[in-house]
Length: 328
Image (cartoon, rainbow, N blue to C red; front, side, top):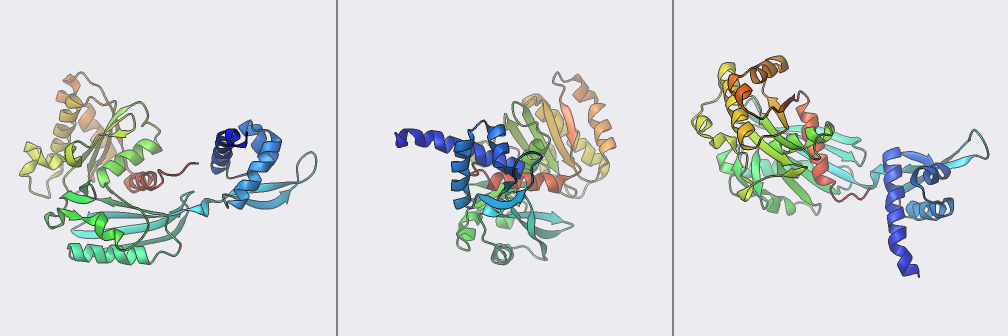
């Protein structure tokens, strides 16, 4: 009989953990009321969850009616994640890094610059960041301007980094699981999660930083479409961009953006375009795309969403990437 009850108990443990993860703090009667689990079962489950350090027993709090009750808190410090964003700004490669817990509360933040970029230099900086962590790291997430296939950079922002198995080299520095993903993908995933538009929709993300080539991401009902060797969306190999010399004028920049959107609007026909496009104002971007004659003639009429909080979107994407194994 106990074995038959185990699946039910596990389900109730997950339900109760999820409730307090979302709520933050609660007393037992509130847990029972909100989850539909009996008070007797809640008492037993809470005891187990405190033993596992998932719940933290707090202070007695006075109720409006009846006796004081113990308030329990979810232990968001069960896990800590190291999030690293690698980007090129004005010709310099920057590593922005932070450590967050399950509630995305920061315990450390920093930024490092590389004056020159080689595999050895980048690996040394990443080693410095990883080994400076002030808490045990559950998982590491890295956003990088390049496509990753089976741990290897295959289309990087710097040719000298191509064919480098970055995950293999980083695994020699730490026992924590390492997740490396393309910045355009993380931007699109993060923005879509923040705006709650991911489920049930087809989304094309256009990540077009200033003084850089664009990257494109395709999401279908929450699933990332990466293509052969994760090369889907390498827009810099489109004919009108292959021979482009950087930097370009704003006029050329906007023309390239329109051409890019026009192609994907026909090929993918998304419900949403999620766009980060350099230093152009949101009003100019909106006017350029919504009034373009080519796009007006195309049968698909997408929503254009412009992101002016791109770092937050990438961070959300990174957190999603490293926290997939969370059961709460």
